[in-house]
Every structure is written in C-alpha cells, then in structure tokens.
Image (cartoon, rainbow, N blue to C red):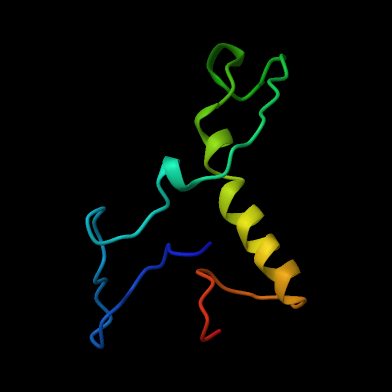
Length: 85
C-alpha cells in the first residue's frame, strides 16, 4: 500500500520488473496479525486441501491503505499511497 508500484519508462517498458528493483513490503515491515484456521474441506482443492500461503500477505496492503484513508478522512483510489496523490 505504501511502496509497491510498477514503474514504466516513456517507451512503456517496465523499469522495476525484478525483485531487486520492485520495492515489496518485507515480512519484518508487516504488522502483526492474528489468524484463525477454520477446518473444513475445500471442494475445488486437491483432496479437499485449502490454500494457506495468502493469509499472511493478502490483508496487509488493504489494511494499511484503509488506515491511511481513515487518517486522511478521504478515499484514495490507487496504490501505492504517495504524498502527491
């Protein structure tokens, strides 16, 4: 929400297309979250398995983005949050 952005040059080519140049939020920069696991079968997963890797990464950007919107008292419509926007 604060740093992840695809940057393109004047020719329309992606400038930060690798993990050295693309500033993604690190695990150490993410807020602590509490996760509750709900047992059950996922009919679309193999042998009823559920995906689990997204639960630590998916909610972070929307939570930070919403907190910034609340602090500013207005809606924002694009990532990342920048002062000029």
